[in-house]
Image (tube, rainbow, N blue to C red):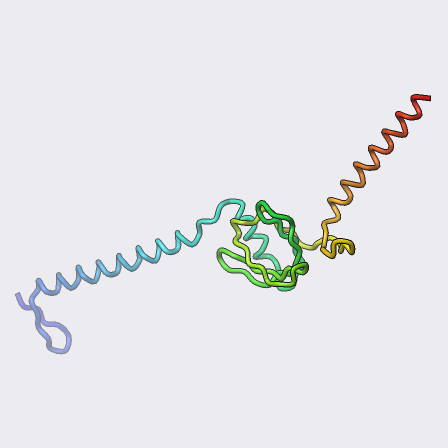
Length: 149
């Protein structure tokens, strides 16, 4: 059976059905590939997603403290981020550092002071904890010595 199309063109009905099926197949394949790409880009772990949420709130040049997995804290200024990584300027090493969200244990805004002996930035929390421990040991020694008399 012949069907008349626009502009005076004619074609058989089976050709139209075939073209329709090809069009539907291409449309479904395109939509499936788009959804697969969207699923692959959002495969961050819960910890990495939390780190990314913190990074997304930062503004450029914000002072940050980054604790990578199995490494010492790094101090710097936030520069930029994308879906899987972020970049900051390490103030101690004086270079841009890019880390994956998956490789970061903790991130917080601000950083401690500067240690003039080691020429590096430090976290004051560690110094305070060490000071409290030393003071506790000294008080315990003084109390023990007073009880011996």
